[in-house]
Length: 179
Image 1: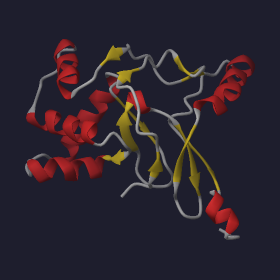
Image 2 (image 1 turned 60 degrees about the vertical axis):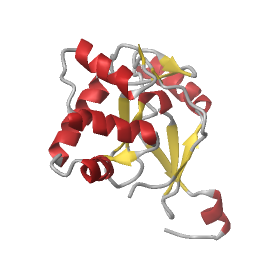
Image 3 (image 1 turned 90 degrees about the vertical axis):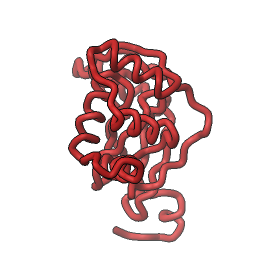
């Protein structure tokens, strides 16, 4: 399973432009902005881009929309395969890749485990405890200066939503744990 992530319940499902910025923080690759609120909205977007609407894609999207947290491809495959056992893990990966290209999902790395996927509208930065593995949602505002400085000094647009910053959570600091 993926690390636990403490997140707020309220979120918009608007898929953001990767050429734009969230709270002033630029991120990722060029991806058009789409307003998607449901599985059917995403499937319409897939059709518009020339893709096919398949049962496996619909089931994957239902899994993602039903629980918009972080999930590895393997976790999502398990959810989909519970309803359609013939869907192969490679199909899940191909669909996730296409949904990422369309700007519907993004992936991030929450530690040493597999990449996790979640709705692009919920993209955020993470702090991960290197001792207990707890992942904490970090406010985008913390990364505005870093993003501005990287752009100004190096001409580099960072994607802080893609990676995690490691350290020690409050509980592990208080317990005096060591690596």
